Length: 471
Image 1 (cartoon, rainbow, N blue to C red):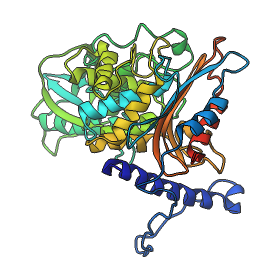
Image 2: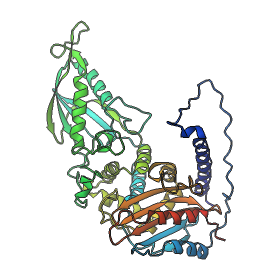
Image 3: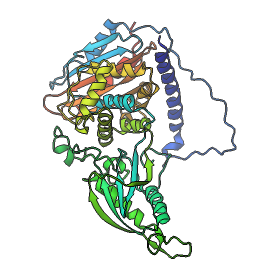
Image 4: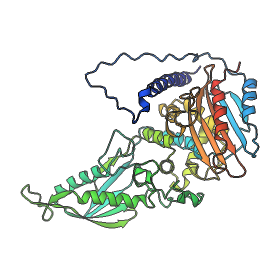
């Protein structure tokens, strides 16, 4: 077994043990009497030495499932349903790349949000897991230029490096800016908004209008707070113009700051202080100016983890545009950029219209998503090997919290969900009962347009996969 695959298996074992421990704690009767208790460990406390994960069945020479047995089991589950829903799927052994199961796996289908796996991989490969994106303030005379550099997870308050959303805060940016204005004795400024990085790619023509009215996406800008939403609440309403709102929040915070009164140069400590006067300036690309301050986003690897955990469409689309720009393509060609990276890793049959999976016209075979997951798990790049561990955990986190949440399945699958009218998908990694690490992707399609058809059937298939020694 390859070293990279052994690492995947070992970490999966550790995950299972850790999740089992957490679930055991959360299952204690006292946790069902109201709000969960908070646990704190005093700094002076001595913690016991960590014990190695004790999970059986994860042998480096674990037996390969018998494809005939596995096929019989999965074909029985993924048979065409009475309402016309059909399935396509592929399962790969990660170590060898052997196809363990296939049902129309090369047939293109609509991936929905499973496509975010391809975008995450393209971003990590192109930009690197340590990449961070700056929101900057420049000064040109009495014009402050607020320039977006791709961070759409800004918070309104102080920067909070303990989180991913709000890692960079607009209140902190205002404070840093005010310090520089004090040094220059400037007390009146006009704030120009430079949101030009993404060009005219705010709205993808492949998106149906209903996606906007149902709060699934909004126009995408290179500067936004809370991934384009009005607050940090997961399902908060999207801003129609998130960039303009960032300027409003920044200007308000800056107007709360003070500088010595008087004209430029009047910086004596004896000068009385006054609030900074802030007025709204123009908008668009701005040339020139001296940088006064900047705040930088959380590392890309953390943003990817958040993106996959909550299936954030706005963040995914912003990251896709950054991939395009880095690959010397217009931001409008973000889908082309992601597709080109996927091809490099052996997924050559993607036809993409966007990077989040919202466009119903995206065409991807399940085999290509399984290929990408296997390629990431065995990659020489650490940030790509991390991709599998950024996926939600069955019965435990993110969009998988209520999926595969029975005792037999909980904590044993990491996967990305996908849901559109007529479409449900699930793509991820797991370990079979015999100890083989596998990548899988399953699509369902309902001709009558039912929302996310037969997700329980897909879950049943994945549960059968990880439970199958199949010898």
